Image (cartoon, rainbow, N blue to C red; front, side, top):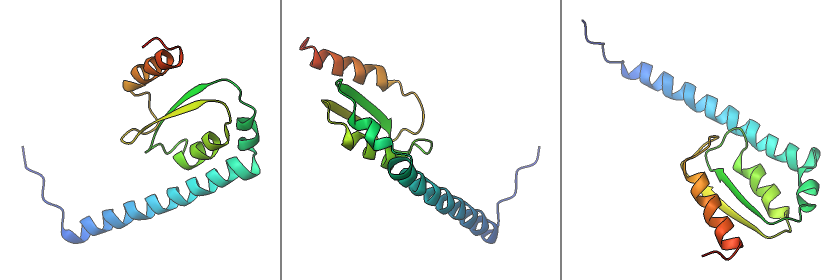
Length: 112
């Protein structure tokens, strides 16, 4: 079995700049989606109509539902609400979600 050769520095830079270009493209797209969902599509008016208390939890690194659009919707909700922001989670179902939700329900119902 042969050992893989090390990548030359030039090739490492090329991969790095390719990744940078991809990140810049997708972040620009996500900022536009945040604007579209809140201002054009009208997500915020629907959020204002919520009347039930809620516990909201999302990952800070979510690229499917960007935190910018989630914060825009969250800030327009007038019902009692609580936010749990998981800084190292993307668009996934984290293990901690059940614990956070159960703790919120217990606090809301004055069980603890």
